[in-house]
Figure 1 (cartoon, rainbow, N blue to C red):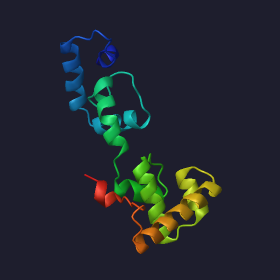
Figure 2: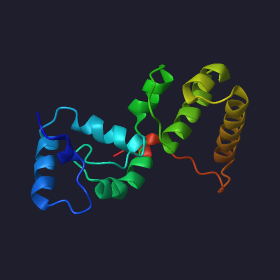
Figure 3: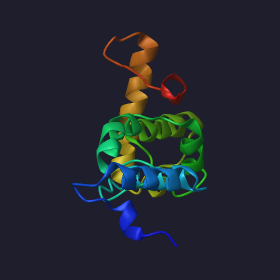
Length: 147
């Protein structure tokens, strides 16, 4: 068993301990899932997914801008998936296109039906603005932002 303190280096952590912790993380089968979980819950403690606290802060913004169509589809299918803001917007867009009922979308987004109805109205209005060529309407899709 590895020393758990190795993954929680103090402020004066030496480079050798950090290197060893990163080496262990890089060989771990769930390293990517671990990192994603840390970014989803804003976990700031210790080494997670091979990144230190400072390194995770640096990638957090990019993580929050991600838009993965597979994650959106999984959420719409009923899986409990953390969705970033662009993914939530994409989910609402898909719901409008597919005619997903408001109660189902409310369960997926974990918000009230009243809030979902407001989101659906806003998206429908955006669709009309895009159709009419109104420049103020900008529609972001996962296909355009996924890497």
